[in-house]
Amino acid sequence: MNIRLKSHQKDIIYSPASIFELMKDILLRRNRVSRGRENLWVVSLDGYDRVIGVELVSMGTCNETLVCVKEVFVVH
Image 1: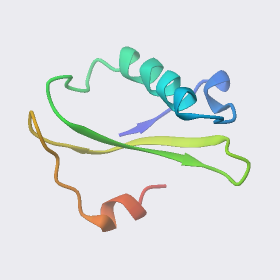
Image 2: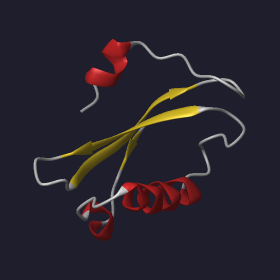
Image 3: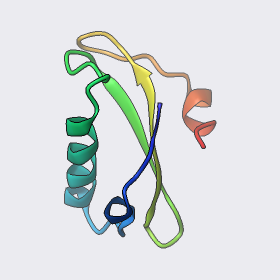
Image 4: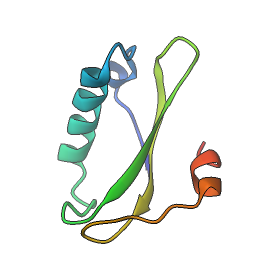
């Protein structure tokens, strides 16, 4: 699932707190993502640490998610 970002969400990532705020925004507006399951998200950054994409790679069970390395590196 590829997430469409709002303009303010494409800001520069300065710290883990920046990622937390970005993902909090995304997860609160996404009703289709099951909150009772593990999810693996990829946040892609450019060379200047600006967000260029956020994608849900895998949805797992209540306590784990299985991911092939190939799935992570194929994300666009």
